[in-house]
Amino acid sequence: MGAAFAVGAPRSGFAQPLGVPGRAVPLYAVSDRCADPRLPALAGPWVVACGAGGRVDHVLSLQTGADFELPTPLERPGLGPSALYQPGWDSTVLRLTPSGPVPVEGVTRLMDRAAGPPATDGEHIVLVSDDAVQVLGVTQRGRRRHATWAAGWYGAALTWPYVAWVADGWTDGEDVWWMDASAERPSPARLAAGPGHQRHVVAHGGWLAWVEAGAIGLLHPASGTARRVPAETGFSAPITLWEGVVCWEERGGADGVDVRCSDGLAAGGPGDQRWPSRWGPWLLYREGDRVMLATAVAP
Image 1 (cartoon, rainbow, N blue to C red):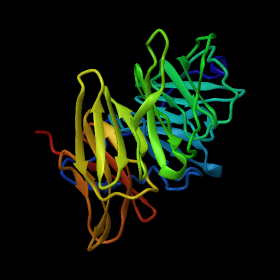
Image 2: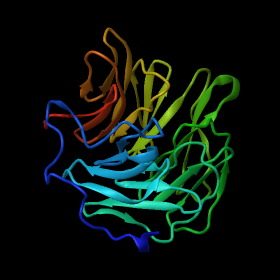
Image 3: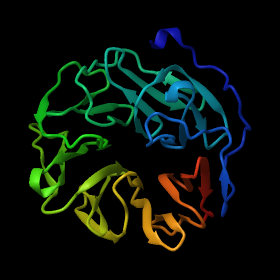
Image 4: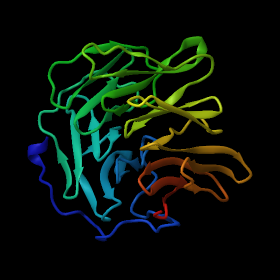
């Protein structure tokens, strides 16, 4: 795939960072018409956006305002920091660079049907199917299947070498499982389990975060640091994580659903603010059918 596409000029751009510090503004270049309701969303400092048919076909740089067309539209790719991954017969990894999306040559084909969105960091790929988890380097040929019973719909999470996913806990609801993929013999284990629902696991910057009853749990496996952020969030939209900052849909307010972040950045007001996606100072979300961008004020 990559040989047929050359990185080139953006189809549009403003040569300046997007957003206004301390304000929320609409992103008119991005529509709310993706087939997957989790999109549009951020892959690092890039807005992953859709066109005809609800497929992902362009990315917008928050750092420069440049808008790049993808070499081939993607159906439901996994998002990572400045990277996209779609498994299947034409397995694709795109690294998002200042010059545009660059396809990786020789991506290993994983043909299993994904139970939810896969994950990537541009160097590794994770695919959770109904009965197995696979983690490998982008072009690695050897692979190992780790047995699981995926809950479905929920995305995989990756902050190398840690991988996490949501499994079906049967009568106890969903559970979050994880493993250290760099171990000589990786061994999946429960990360958050028990009565009730533990789900919507996400990862970034060495942190893992997930939704549980009345809170969002966070763990930094390398240091052993763990904490809980009280939150009355729902079950439809995933939470979002940047470094150790988590954002979520907060429910129960007088004006409907608002977006809250653990560092104080928020989006509220009349109507519902939903589907948060966070990177650095930027918070992407939706208000009705408008895609909005809030930008934190630099400290």
